[in-house]
Length: 630
Image: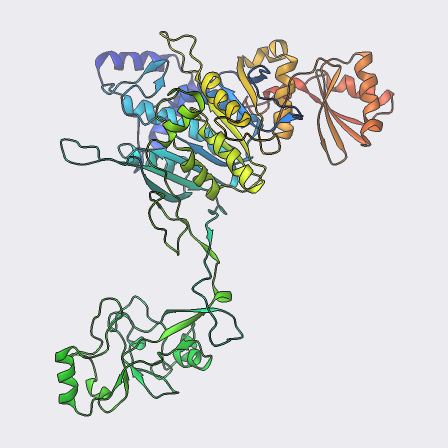
C-alpha cells in the first residue's frame, strides 16, 4: 500500500470509536478464509446501508395507468439500485420469488459507474470496487427472496469466476449451477485465435426451488402386449460398473421360456444381482434378476440370431472371427478368450440380441424432463430427455429496441426471447420478478409475454438508474428508455398487439427521496406515506395520492387497512362510516398520532387498531428501535 494511502487509513482509524475499532478487529481476525477476498470497509458499508430513509413517490405522468387500473402491481423504480433495494427491503422482504439481473461486466470499457465516476480498465482497485458494488446489492437482494426463491445472474467469461465466488459467499449452500449460451453467430478473432462467443448465467436457489422443466414425451412408450400396467419402453439392463467392481452382477442370463443364454458385458454388468450369486438375499434391495423375470419386467429379444458352439475350438474360432454377441453401440465383443469360465458357453443356445428392462410410464419417478445447462441456438435439435432453453439469433435484443423506438436507444440489450425462456422455466404464474439492473426493460416485456401466454398473474419490479453524468445531466435512461419501452409494448407497436391490465399492462413509476431518519416525521409527505404503506401491506402501489381525508389501502379478511393523515372531524366521520360501507368489523388505521385517534374512534363505538405513520416509514430501514407516537 502506498505511503499516502497508509496515512489516509491511519487518519480514518483515529476517527473511529471503540465499538467500531473492535468490529474491524474482530472481522480481521475471524473472517480470513479460503475463497474470495477484496478490499472493502465494513464501517463504510454499514454507514451506506443506514445512511438515511428511502421513501417512494408515485409520478403519475411517467406511470402507465390505462382505464380500469385500480392499483399498480408492477413497479418501475428510478434511482440508484442500492437505494431501490433498501426501499424494497422495507416493503418486499421475503416476497420476491425470482430475481434476474444483468449487472455491469467490469470490462473497463465504461460499462459502469461507481462513486459517480466511470471505472476504467487501468483502475488499480477496479475488481475490488466491482465486487464491493455487487456485494452490497446482492446482500440486500438476498433478503427479498422467498424461501424457495432463485436469483439468475448473467456474466461474461472473464468475470465469471470472481462473481461465482462472490455468489457462494452471499448465498452459501444455494448454488444450483450455471447455464451457457452463445452470444454471437460469427467468430470473434483475437491474437490467440480464441473466439469468445458465449456468456454464463449463474443460478442460486433456495430450498424447494426447481425449474419447471418440460413434460416427458410419451411417444416412446407403447403397449404392444396389452400389459395391464400400461405403456412401457425398454431401458438398458446394465449399469456403469465392471465385473471387478460388482462381481455378483456378472453372470450368464437365461431366458427361462426359450432356454437361450446371454453373456454379460464385463464393462457394464447387469443392473440386478442373481439369487444364485448372492447368499444373503436381504442384501438385494433393488430386487433380484429372477424376481424381475417372474414379474415379466425383463424383455428378451424376439427373432434374434441364436447359435450353439459344440466345441471349445469352434467357440475360439468364432471369437477370432468376431462372430460373437456384441454391445449395441460400440460393438465390443461380449465373449473373448479371456472371458471367465469360457467353457460354460459350449453346447448352449446363445442369443446375439440384448435383453432390456420393461420400464412402465406410471413407474417413472417424474414425468418432467430437467432443464439443460446448455442453451443452444433455437435451430439446433432438442434432446428428448431434457428441457432445452433456446437462444435466439445474435442481434435479437438490438432488433427489438429498434422495432420499438426506431433507433438504437440502448446498447447491448439482452434478447427478449432468452429472458422469456429463462422466466418460463424459473417462474410460476403468480410470482413477483425483480430486475434491479433493468436497463432497457427487457425483463418487464418478458413478464408480459408470459402472462399473455398462460393467463398468469406475474408482477415485475424493475430498478433502473438515470445514468446522468456531468456531460449529460438531463439523461434519464429509466424514464426515457425503460419506462417508455414498456409503455409502447403495453399499448402495442409495429402491428403487434398490446397487453391488457389483466395481463400486467400497467405500472407505477416511482422516484425516490432520501430523508434523514430524524427528519422523517417532519419532511415525509402524505404521498410518501400512502405509497410506502400500500407497498408494505399489499405489495402494490396506489395509482396516485388522493387528496382526501382518508385513503383505503387494502381489504384483508374482515380487516380494512386505511391511512388517515389528519384526525379532522371529516376524517373521523369517514372512518366511522367505513365498517358499514364495506361490511367489515375491524379497521387498521395508519395515522400521525395512533393513541389519540384510537380514543376518538372508541368514543364513536368504532373498533380500530391504530399504527404510527412515522414508525411505518422507518420500518425495515432503520436498524435498532423506533420512536413511539402518542
